Length: 69
Image (cartoon, rainbow, N blue to C red; front, top):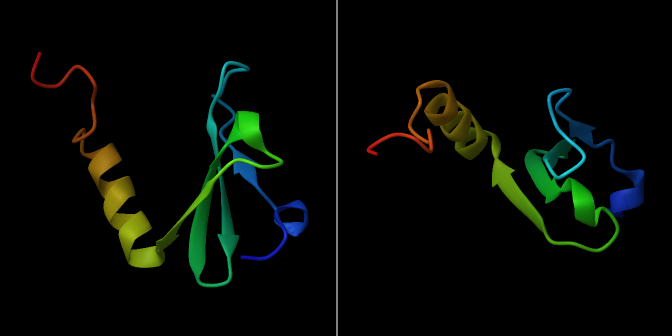
């Protein structure tokens, strides 16, 4: 992965100061990091197919924390 400082990270406008994730397109991959650890925290990378599947699951409520309670 290229230097994190040169990547254009995006964060949701709905995020709070207590934490959120940031995403960026890096080549043909989607990178995700913790917005509180911008300089040295871990970065997860996903293919476009993996990212699309994740977003579909989010939109479909598969990751709703209240589900099954």
